[in-house]
Image 1 (cartoon, rainbow, N blue to C red):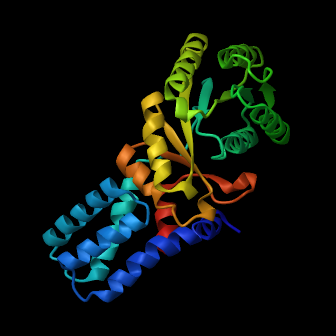
Image 2 (cartoon, one colour):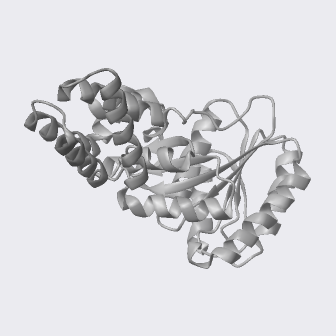
Image 3 (cartoon, rainbow, N blue to C red):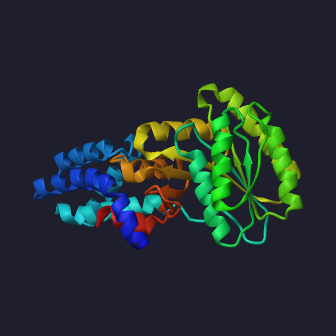
Length: 302
């Protein structure tokens, strides 16, 4: 199965939700009017795009339809696909720069697939010829350390870890030293996901960033936030809270294949202007895919 077919299959539930809601609406009207736009707004909100993004889309459709004197729902449907693709185009694939040291902090609450995503990204970067090192800086859960060790083995990459309860900053410091001595291309750091205690989380992330700034002042840096697509609007709220604690550069959206709430990817890109870097459309290593806006929109609306 090719990438596009895998993506289409993975988005089946989301497509049925979003496109199902919208198609039934387009079929119910002969001409667009205020009632049509009101129902479209409701359909988009129900598809987990979020209020702010939905209002923006519908206002833009009204304006363009007026300017182009469009009367038929099918004509407005084409505009809608273009509008959504345009919102998603803020997202560009790629998280490393060739020829530079690359440091990636991965954040997210427990249970969203953070450690698994790190393992899959590490495996992909390794397969592309990069020397990858993992840092198990989520020291608050022994399970997180053990799980990352398993993924390091599976991806055939090195890992730096301490015991449960150790200082996460010390792990990052040792990992930075190891990355330098082993001439690694990429250092990926796991972090604790204790969003309920935002002040501690913020201080912890600041400390890690200070260490990494000092050790690798010229490195290419990424802060990836992992979100679970099945939580819909909760994922958008998590993104807002984490954005207050860290300078997020990209989103990894997991479990898209298991949910009808994948419209949240449009809401995140539209509302927070944070690019989506990876989407998870299955369990396998190859099913965490670099996000491409045009292919996503095409798979969604085909």
